[in-house]
Length: 258
Image 1 (cartoon, rainbow, N blue to C red):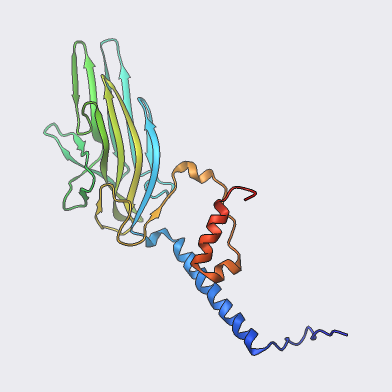
Image 2 (cartoon, one colour; image 1 turned 90 degrees about the horizontal axis):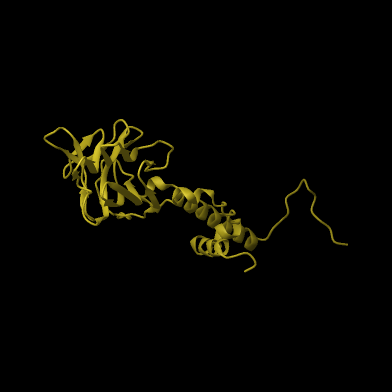
């Protein structure tokens, strides 16, 4: 008759089995620490979020760079018509304590730079204008048309960048927002195609940079948050480390029944 050890006494396992279980636990623990480290976006230098949002006439977009629920900048496409004319203007309004890279005109207005890819965004290379910063305007009054702004050209501005400075927990960070802007007569249309920020306070960022010298983290766009969450990895997968995590991710992304 097969007997089992008493519940009050531990089973006497062989040394080899003890050794394998010990190594298994160490591997699982190490993999668990690795997974936790990967889940911390604060360790990355640049956090990039790809989006595709059109901001048409009369529309507003609230830009939350680090997706903490706090609006950092508001993009506004103002449009207004009267019997004597029509005016349209595209501008960005930073939240209190934040600012946009730009300059102040002789009339006292803030104009936002339309930065090219690779241009440095920091307190040395750029002047940051507090308050509302205009990007483009097009006004028609009686028989005259007035147009201007760094983001205005014909047929339009493609893949230019706003230089952004904003606060996270009271510390200044630099970032960018990439937009395409088109103007037709007095109608302005802007398309936001992505944004990013540097997670290390006071560290410069290049316009268009999606990765830093360390591993970067890509945040999903707002629509991605409605996707179902992934199933947790098993302890066996964790014990195998990063190779198994790759297998697990491939399995999770595969269609049902495959």
